[in-house]
Length: 289
Image 1 (cartoon, helix red, strand yellow):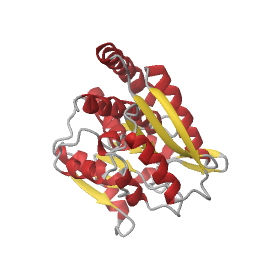
Image 2 (cartoon, helix red, strand yellow):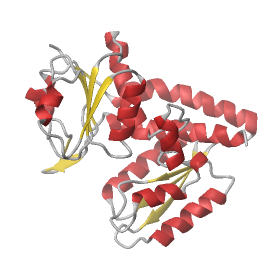
Image 3 (cartoon, rainbow, N blue to C red):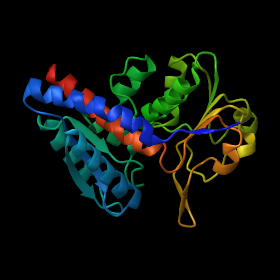
């Protein structure tokens, strides 16, 4: 079996011109374009790297970015609330993105409720989460949307469909695992979500036609577990010995998967593009009043 890598660059190259045209049309129609505000953590390397990538892509597309850095070790709830409240009240701000994971002194669920639902470009506000449950969300989780975009790329290449497929999601976080599970169900995949209490994880993985892994444990999923011909989306980002690796044992998985995302260069850049797509969607919602 010859595996096909699902590289972010292929998807970004397809999506970016479409999104840029959309933004140009909105600017011509409304006399302004989308503004995105990003709250990140100045002493947290992953946050800095993600912020830099977001700024770069936003400027390339014609979205105006603005950032606010907070100190990971000392940031308080009051500080974050003050920044978000200011952005909520500013009509020139159309999208708000707060980097996760949050420092341990902040409560992620509480912070999610502070963001204006129409400006919540990560789709984490309870209103947006509830709409997702009923398949009515206009703004969804950026990483979950990126995962689905990569799955759809595999389906486009193979001519397949998700309907009736066995889908297994390993990890049940509120920003990846749970929303991915809902999106797969919406597409009529038979979906199992595994988590820390799941017994016989290998057995679940072995029957997956579509496997999504978002745990944050390097090479947790062994290549020998992968069902031959499966689509494997590895969301994990782990640094081991100075090297970035995913949650899936990559080289061994290549021998069995039909489609596989590399780490890095797979989910991450597509997630950035979904942030921009959601920012445009938020802009449209706000222009309708």
